[in-house]
Image 1: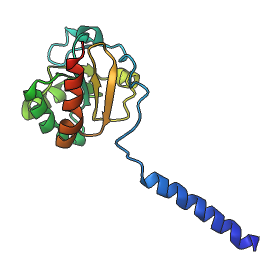
Image 2 (image 1 turned 180 degrees about the vertical axis):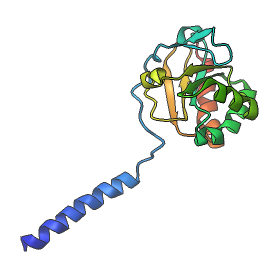
Image 3 (image 1 turned 90 degrees about the vertical axis):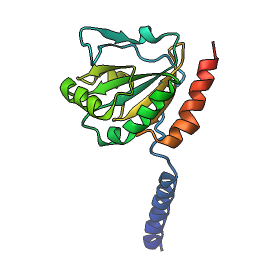
Length: 176
């Protein structure tokens, strides 16, 4: 009897874990940065490498931090949506060009349009590590005090813009 009961019990436990796993949303990877100050950074600007941008330069402004790369297929799919979002001027959009060659990144922006108010370079991936980047694309919303309020993993969709980003940005813009 035990010979048949043990495999049945094991199968039941595995089935329960599988069922729980199927109900998870892979795009909703929790971030330990939510409601905490954004990690400090200082990096050269993509278009003008002699100049640097730091998080301190953005204090007092609501901004999006979009991690992207020219080699990223998902970044290409979200790029038209970012271009549309940039036209609305709801918030500053800062790009983090992640583990990419500057020439490739500049060519990509020239070809597909540039939604970024400024894009900085992270060729060695250190800034991405500080921000807990799992992969590209990822987009963060940062408030006027420099606190991370939201993280989106994966490509941004039009529904994400309408249902999450724009309402959150409007709420953060209204706060002092």
